[in-house]
Image (cartoon, rainbow, N blue to C red; front, side, top):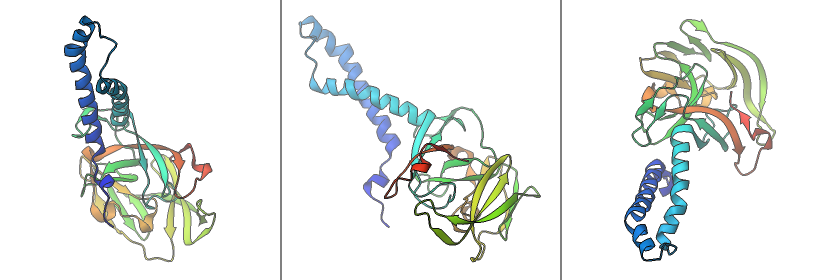
Length: 263
């Protein structure tokens, strides 16, 4: 499927440029032209372009600060994190969780923390950093992770799972044939994963996480394109920790998902 011009738009760059240009125009007017208008008794006659700049610059600046350093909204485009996240979930990601970074260049300027095993994290896809991915953190730097026949082992310790209930889709309240939900305890965090017992398990192997990297896996274990297939995520590609779902829209609203936390 071909991407649209909206998909190719570098929104952070556009936002930085819009903030810089409007701020510069406002500054030039305040220093060079506004004093002349006041001296001529025309201080109240502000050019229409300057009026627009004075209106838009604070908005651009606030959005830039919030989006770059605190919270950024994302929409879930795929089913790789079912049952935790559904296609059409709109989530907020805390960008302060894994360090404060400059927009566009992504250089870390303040270390505020690191991912923990079990976090749901957004990151820039290593093979194409313009794409944002979301997965669960399974392996930390130095970990040895083994996935075989739907069994997950981290540093030689089996990751506990329990329960096996048929999966009912929240979208239409219908059973999904062959899909079962299990509870998984990864680190100190309990969450649910989805498996298709009638399908051949995929992504088996042993993965040793290099220093400065993380190993990410989707909760939809049998249908997720994740680190089992393309490797590890460098620390500099981290965007932030997914905190909560603020709405759901995929042809309709699922009210029960509004303002729900992500586990």
